[in-house]
Image (cartoon, rainbow, N blue to C red; front, top):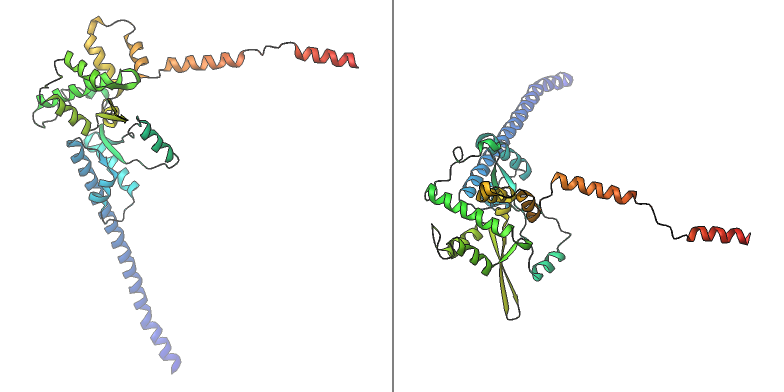
Length: 305
């Protein structure tokens, strides 16, 4: 009788174990679906956050992503970032590009940078740049933004490009505040610009990262210089500076204009690389000049023998 009761208990337990396995599978499937849905929502939030930041010309900071996008979601940053990049490229023709770190100009900044030289940090901020082919980047296809008005936005973009070009073509890629003021005076823009006072516009450019104001205090002396900011390097860059200067010169441009510009901007061309390789080869092929000491040693050795 005991054997019969044990067998019946096993039979009764068998279907229960099957049901529990099915329940576990359903729970797992549900968790996977929830994770996929939560990750998809986080990706969409990151895309919206990136677009909102770029609309205001603000950097897309990693800290902002952690606070406003990731928040309590336990999703790997790299996975969400890559998925957001795919959506930005496919739907908006843009992608997030890492912003370079601000240059250390003053001695104080350079000393502090040397102390933390070995500690490499992940990218802290990004901006959106277009991924459209060059032939689709004309004003007819990509018109100025409607912030304020399209004319005002176009004027501001042109002034940003002009100021960045002046700084980039200056010796050491840095220009004193007084010298920049003189250049702007030639453009009749040292006091007022189309959208606001020059001082306010330069401050706005600095806040948005197109240019950076460097103030160095040594004792009682204070020097103020301007350098190209992180956004200016990525969004405008050397290519836009070249294009602006060529457009200004027009048909009266000298034949060696591009060579002079590439030299001033520090652009390394394919020809420069080839010349460097040739120079290195020439240096390797230079025969060693002997002063005759080896032969003298050999001769003296023979005499001793």
